[in-house]
Length: 252
Ligand SMILES: Nc1ncnc2c1ncn2[C@@H]1O[C@H](COP(=O)(O)OP(=O)(O)OP(=O)(O)O)[C@@H](O)[C@H]1O
Ligand SMILES: [Mg+2]
Image 1 (cartoon, rainbow, N blue to C red):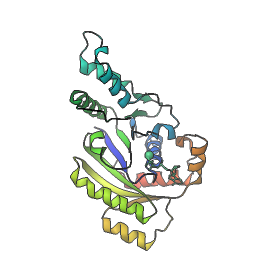
Image 2 (image 1 turned 45 degrees about the horizontal axis):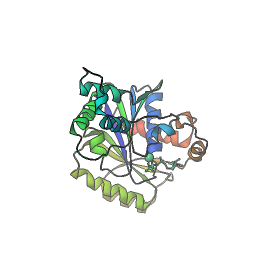
Image 3 (image 1 turned 120 degrees about the vertical axis):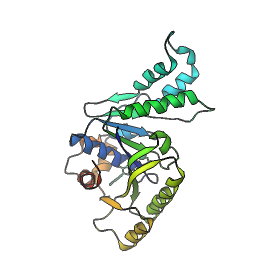
Image 4 (image 1 turned 45 degrees about the vertical axis):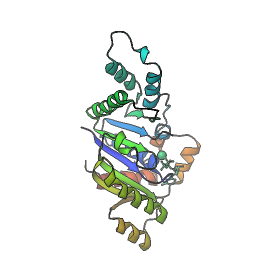
């Protein structure tokens, strides 16, 4: 069974950036095989890791719904759909990427959704780690991780507003069909020493701060030049911070 690592937090705080750097950490330390899952419909996890994404599970599902007669004769529907979904996995030398894309359609596609759930559960047998990058908000997290997360990182920028979003998300967890084994806060673009006010507000939430990622100008530069974050030098402050955070806090 894979260990599932997921991220949640307000829009734009750095979830995709940290998820990419976690993939980088796992692969550079030999903790493979890794499946990176882009579960944000405005997907860009692949992009930040320098990959060209051409199809998604959502596209495949839509096409299948539009033309269910396209199944080769004599082939079982479920097996056919699963083989199509396998085509959405992009393989690289160090890890694989699965882009979920848009999932919501009209009506109940129970059969298709069941196959999709089985598919993600089957994948869990093939990878040691799954790194799931989500959209802001939590609504879909339970559905996209087969209801189980080993480590949920709540990402916030260095602001009280970001922390309040973390508090809200943390409060939503009870109402979700989601088992979370461990949970912690990551602060992005934070100073070396967090202010007392920030620490006090975080303390009230009752979730430990596991690490702080400093502001790293190289991230903007790589974004502008469309370079993969996997090619950042190992000495980049954001890389150093994520490597350290993973080594000290992740239950390998
Ligand atoms: N530690 C950092 N230092 C400097 N820039 C950063 C840092 N973390 C993230 N950024 C920048 O902030 C922007 C938003 O980051 P990112 O896309 O990772 O956020 P997100 O939470 O995934 O956003 P969304 O909610 O839209 O998916 C990017 O341009 C990224 O390069
Ligand atoms: Mg993102």
